[in-house]
Amino acid sequence: MANDASGADQHGEENPVEGTVTLADDALYRAFASRQRRRLLAMLRDVGRDGTSVDELATLLCGYDATDASTMGTADDRDRLLAALTHVHLPHLDDVGLVEYDRTAGTVAPRPLDPGVEDLLDRSVAAESARRRPSRRT
Image 1 (cartoon, rainbow, N blue to C red):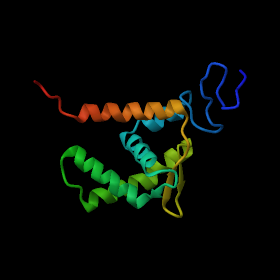
Image 2 (cartoon, rainbow, N blue to C red):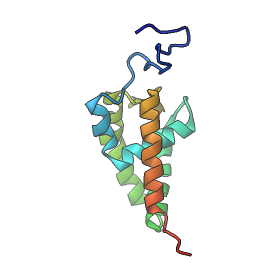
Image 3 (cartoon, rainbow, N blue to C red):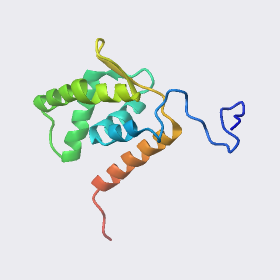
Image 4 (tube, rainbow, N blue to C red):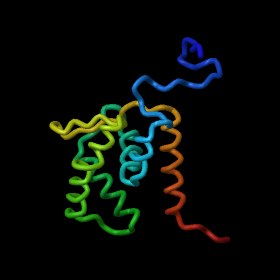
């Protein structure tokens, strides 16, 4: 299909940025299978293109988990989460192509997402938030 100057095909649909993960990639669904990774991707998108430190992400995620469970996160909780981030989640997301993880510097930044992947992330985070929210009866 021919693309116009904006990168859209003749049907007006955006083509994915070359090298980005798309909805057709099985690796995307393996990455999204983990609630921690979905939360991590949403948080990284919020911190911006420059990214943040892995330590900061561990602190943010620990707070998110504690709030979700209506508890207080402890230093041990954060340390366990930091270990999981550095040894499991971030390497996986980097291998898939969803983040740029610099193990040496201890930093992570989001990579550009295909619009369909962006939408799937938004919908999955919204669905999780709605499920956690108690229903109100009138």
